[in-house]
Image (cartoon, rainbow, N blue to C red):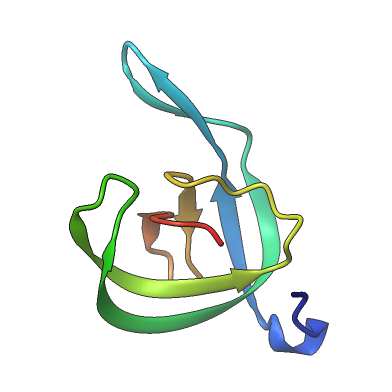
Length: 87
């Protein structure tokens, strides 16, 4: 489902997760100024491994955004976080 453009009032930066290397996670080139809607709310969710983790924000963006789970996201307030799940 595509959200109307006027709802995507925030701008985020996404570094797509590319996998693990001998030195830790690797990321693709950063995509800056991505239109999104960011809802800040602390809640408990399950990660892909089934463990309960704390989520501090939910990000809504266009469906064609390349953002696999574990991607690094810089939120509008400057915090850097990881994508737990993508739907």
